[in-house]
Length: 495
Ligand SMILES: Cc1ncc(COP(=O)(O)O)c(C=O)c1O
Image (cartoon, rainbow, N blue to C red):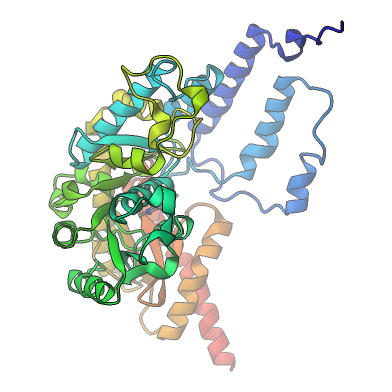
């Protein structure tokens, strides 16, 4: 009889001392970068796809290599091929800078395979996730007995909220019969709600045409009178409105929708109320901003995103729900091969989300909150709100600039608009500033649009950005803007 071959355990063996050397070197590389956060330009040097591919080879290596040499290759080729997210001049998008110790922790969790799964297997990691969910809920003013499920980011957290809404409010067994089981379902969100709401409708089979984008008031907030009218119109057309999404801090301007008034509409009309607080909910830590979040606690589900304003390394989002059974109705399953053993005392995580096996993303959030304390984050959030308000005040007095709205939180849109430059030239210049700033590498500010015209947008969530960095950014933008405006005037004179 032929015996099956036994895999040689030594093939994948690594000497523990080599693990130590590798880990120390890895930490040294991190520390080198932390010692000089602004040392590398914001943007990586341009590299063509062919150049990038050539560095890695077309086929997997048949034979292995020395891991220390591989780590040096990564230091040489991978690190510089990524934007420098430690840079204090990053003020674009919603771009936080990663806290280093929670970042390093990922290595420990991965190497020891610590992850949230079944209570009988991984009670520590599961409890971390349950505790972190409650902590986040308390920080943003959501009920502290809420259930939190940690996701890869805000996009997934919003998808989970909408998946729960779809199952809960359709009025038939959505899992069994799908969206074809009844009338068309409609969802409502403002014109400035994040694109992931639309993507979620597409993925959930609800259809993007059934997302009603509600127009904004003067403060770029969802208009409740139009929301109500849209719901009534859809009902009249035989459709079934199921969910309204309020945004607590929109991406374009940082505006907070009228959360309490939306809650009234949701309640009166039997709609699920989901709030997207991915960018802004944590601004509730700033006592001056707390009144904007009245009504947030009335939501059925809330997306928060610790990898944004808490500066937690990617990936870390979280969906908070008042009733965890809503996630179980959307996702719950018990595969036969996992039903053995006794987990009844605790909580099996696969019931509450779509992924069976996934990484522990809660423990790094726990580490950051425990290391710094919530007060440090509250101070940072308040300081970021001050940066936006301070910049708004500064630009109002500067004849070269024009802020286009009053900041609600830490986002501000403005344009470089020196006196005498005609509107069409102002638009052209502002449309080009971001590209030129990228090439200089000292500041990252996003090009965006406000009421159909190009603007520059800053969003302060980076814990390294100081007022001095903001002033330096203004001067850099002025210099770039002046060069472009002069060129535009020369072109106009030549015609
Ligand atoms: C308001 C809002 N919602 C959702 C998202 C998506 O979050 P993530 O990039 O973590 O998936 C963003 C991203 O900027 C956002 O600003």
